[in-house]
Length: 230
Image 1: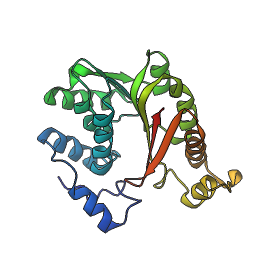
Image 2: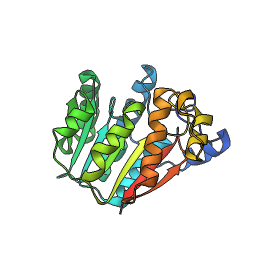
Image 3: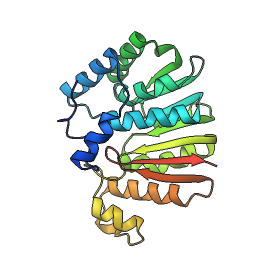
């Protein structure tokens, strides 16, 4: 299933580089193809295969037993992560819309990932507060203005060597790119920023300056921030 025309996927990489990266994405399966096609058909945003493959590689490298995703939609990102979670591990998917999670559950059941997964409808922050850590892998893909609060929630619960990823931090509809870049370079114009850009900037500054984490930024999709607990 060709996602090349799905306009939310690559707003950072130029077209030739994006094609090169996509050509190196691991082979997918029939359930994934249906999941991706259904999201595209219903205009449900997804991170795309470049970010998905990156998430799965990071998870394989870090070997998480427990993972938590803030904002799972129909499970596109979590589907990429699931193979890296052991069968006796736990992957928590969250979304405000219970119907999205039921769709995710159906895909996961067909691929054999449901037994290691928990599907929780509601505010991801409240679900997280009701769940006990530690967590080895955390993905932030909830509302960008919630990123700073979400970081405050999770940072103490991440295991040593654990990873926190945040999507949509460089570009796309959530980020005023020039203002965000100026801010991380040390010249913030807080009054000019909208709420989502402010959330992204505050998050990036917080993770960059946190002495307990090391952070880098990968220019895939709309920008992926990766923080590792030291």
